[in-house]
Length: 354
Image 1: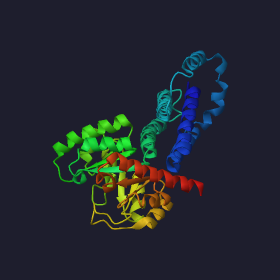
Image 2 (image 1 turned 180 degrees about the vertical axis):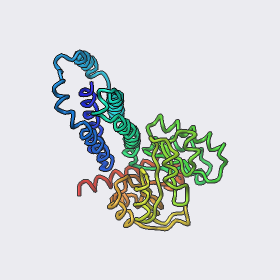
Image 3 (image 1 turned 90 degrees about the vertical axis):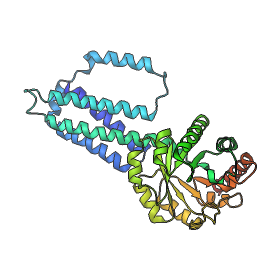
């Protein structure tokens, strides 16, 4: 029993370690899992020869059940990385519990320390949470690309928010952020719920600006905050682990800090002078290039971007481009979005051919 469960633990930990290493490219998480696996091996090293002598895989009655299960499940489902992590984490946790209980037996407690396996099991609970958190947000981070429309109700000029969002989606927008600094929360809740449903049906990311409570109440895909809003550490703690957080920055140090504190994407700006946020500091395209060199999370260029300069920020390395007036200020919203998307695609094509 000890041999079988040690094998399950080690094998499961190796799967989790490789997910952290190769899928997430997370050195810190990978090292934590590797250390756990090595500690487990060191804890049971004195038993290795004895365990081998009791191993009888050929006559294990559980082997047949495992083979039957494998045959019946081949090709029957589209298993995700999230399923893979969950299955292997549970496999390790259950195996550790078995060894922990066996170690309490009088004939075993002189060779195995039950408390050590308990500590390892609790450490894995935390690691499982961290892995699931990063994988859950990874998909949303990868979708942070293309045209990012900030649906600011103060700039709708009489247009209906829901209909405008529908037109931006039909035009090709990939992300919609809902922003309203003036209306009452009760009113915003109704509008935000409808926008979230529309975006979910279309496969478009829906982000709430500033209001953590609103993002939580409608289960938005994420929250966007500025330098004067709630601290990233607080937002990250309060949001569910599968939600993303974006942060506006204007300097390299702010970008570095945002990434270190858990931001899933960074909005750099203002790229150009803008009429929608007159107090914004223009940092220019060079700042975007500099930030691109030091951070690994997606970058969103924002501020004063229109059809004439959108190619410039794409060429500078923006993963997504955020606009307000270039869409909301146009009579033909759908057409404006299509033109911006076309300019982005053209710029990306030129970058790839260089």
